[in-house]
Image 1 (cartoon, chains in turn brown, orange):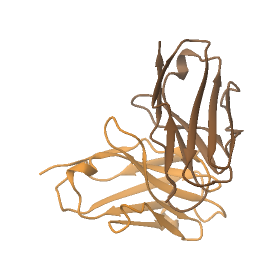
Image 2 (spheres, helix red, strand yellow):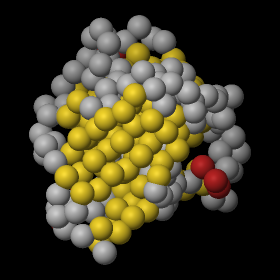
Image 3 (tube, one colour):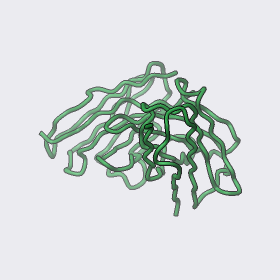
Length: 107
Length: 119
């Protein structure tokens, strides 16, 4: 199975900050990566797929990049509604593993 | 409008088999490149992917749980069913049904159903 790791596991940031979350796969996944946002008590929401393609309706302050095994989610100009937990997920092959999540909270 | 709704028991006893049904509307699982998955999330913990079934009836399972899981679909009823055998308290979680529009990212999630395993 492809293992997914995320760093950091949590971070504190202020409104307006630029935030970067890293996701690493145990083998190359050819940009077959999705990012999700989950707020407490809520269902996860798809932000990006194919590593960098923004899901319809998602604000453009969210962006994704990467290749091979290493990918990043960037939030440019953190907004109050962005405080949440973020998960990456690979869908390249086999079981569609999630990363352990990165919690973004208010500094 | 696409909707997904999970149904099943809220409480199961250890060693019992859990059967969850996802009833959906607004799309067909017979459409090419359509997939559906089950994911779970224990209280306060991370998402865990469980199983996937696609339009062509291919099935994929979590490696650690594959001996306990079965996923199936009923196109005529617009349902996907997950069974998990030999339930244990550690399986206590919210179980989500989800759609993968082109078998990539999960674009639609059900609201989830909380399952508690306790005697």
